[in-house]
Image (cartoon, rainbow, N blue to C red; front, top):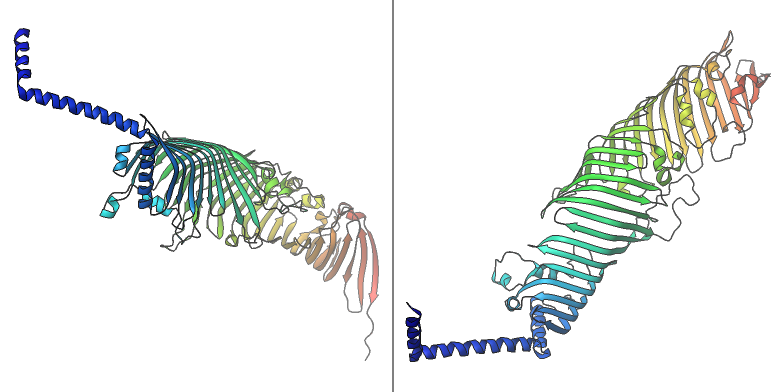
Length: 622
């Protein structure tokens, strides 16, 4: 068709009455729509319409949440459709102010809002205060109704169809204060972006939690936990920087006036650190992550974890740790797997845990300040290997092996620690069976030098040569005890030692069938001795001499001096630390042959003064 013919056809159409009316109607309709849109735009910018919108929104929320929702004022910014609320508050079902927001801005799809479908591109809030209450595990939290309303569960009933639907893409909050029962949380700022109800990116700053904890003794400590920065992305990176844990029970530290007690005290913590995680996978029931690097220090207590890394797989039933590595100063600990099983009321099970073989290279002085000050000089490297499992009350160690690199010290043992459920150190007890302990010749004196104690009877210790011990070790509150057999090149001893941490006394007894006392005390004229002895040593007094402070008594069933053999001797000795005085008595039918002696150094017993005496028995009257 030529242009001339098209123009002719078009002119015929406009000359037709029907088409003229139709085109005019369409033009008028378009004009009306434009006017209505402009009018709606202008109307939305007026306070009257905005207040109507606010009234509609708050009424809708109040009806659906079944509680009071209030907003002081509202404004709508066009064309972005940003709704700004000022002075928003939500009451709980008990008419308490549960949530208050100073300023709240939301980019809302208004048309969806009319269908009770709240779609928010971004929500920003400032000056947020919340009061959350849950009295106990059986009670319903005052905020539970809000959680139920926000759930986007699959619609199943007519009642469910009336629930509000919420979809938020971004959240930005500032200056948040939340009180949960007696705990308080504050937040400087939090940015979070969401995708399909999952966190895409999250960053928080200046997070702090404060709460009180009362222990089994009724002592209340105030705890403060802070995080400088936390950052997460759905690529799997999670970092926690500059976290701090501080506690104060406003009482003296546990080690006050007790220099031999460690500085660790959960009522006086001052810990700091940082952690970096890789989150591999997250579902509703599972978290699969890796702790790439962790640092924890407490400058007062002396805790100094240089590095902690492991795999973490958490489910509803428990947590599995894998490839665990911990380094504290010069000590390193490793185990391939550790399982923590949560308690279950349905299965009637308690919390349990178990590890694969734990191995490590340790230096005991690394843990001396927080846990054992007497180990502060123990710098001999030790190798550790053990398996561990337990529950809420008992820890069991099996296949324990401790040795030095040169194997001059080897300890093999197994045992238990129990009474943990009482949360009271007085109730905790330990029992270990020492299956075998061997100490190379003269190495026992090297071990003794690692402890801050006075070196006494070191010559006698070296005279034992290589030492082997088998027995048990029991530890109750400040009451360790040792029972077993000690074998050496000069004979063997059955021994029992008990220490009372309250009175500072060491008591015990020893027995031997054949001990070469001459070699032990460098007195070659004395031969083998068979005897039993009881002793009591005072460790509370400051010693000025080279001897222990205490007393001992012995019954010698066999002894010899040069070519003279004797039996049935009674010996007693008392020492003030400077000088020891004693007697040896050989009871006879008509008279007791005895001698007195004294010495001030066990290394020079061959020089001690001996005075013989003869004591006749009184004749018995008829």
